[in-house]
Image (cartoon, rainbow, N blue to C red):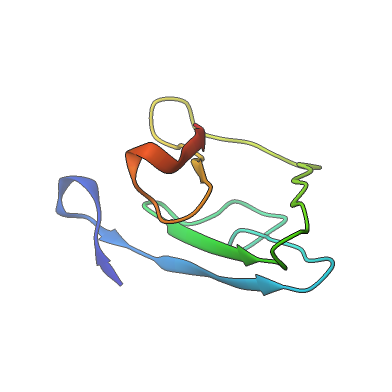
Length: 82
């Protein structure tokens, strides 16, 4: 656990997804996730493979939650979607 915005306790979550298929879920799914959750998922595939993201159930709290997708390291030049 670390400190999130406003010094609140944050829950770190995430992981590594490898192979031909995978599933990413937030902590507590299908119920609500904890406040100040900070989840980072790394998706690794072969050099010539493509990654397709499909969101089946998706809910964000406006003005608090964001989803960012990077191609490579999480730095501004690699940001693909926010």
